[in-house]
Amino acid sequence: MSRSQGQDLAYQAGEITGQAQTGEQMKNMAQGAAEAVKNTLGMNADNNPTSRGSGGTNNPSHPSNPSTRI
Image 1 (spheres, one colour):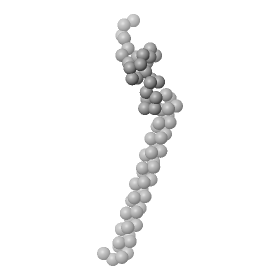
Image 2 (cartoon, helix red, strand yellow; image 1 turned 180 degrees about the vertical axis):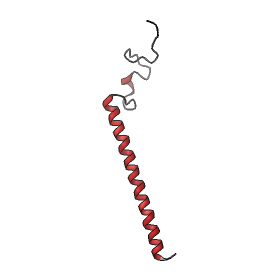
Image 3 (cartoon, helix red, strand yellow; image 1 turned 180 degrees about the horizontal axis):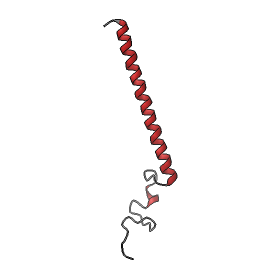
Image 4 (spheres, one colour; image 1 turned 60 degrees about the vertical axis):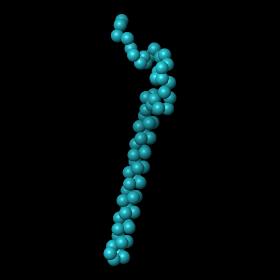
């Protein structure tokens, strides 16, 4: 392998690494945006599990097993 071929391969490997890092950043940005929407709508149970009546708390607004009787 000549020196120019080795340099070209090294450049291509660096370029692929850079593209993978950009992809990771985009994934993280999308996840952050999704979390922001969930927080805004009050749907993010990961940050505050007791706010939605989970964990065995008694919350009549959001029963975990609603009765079908009227």
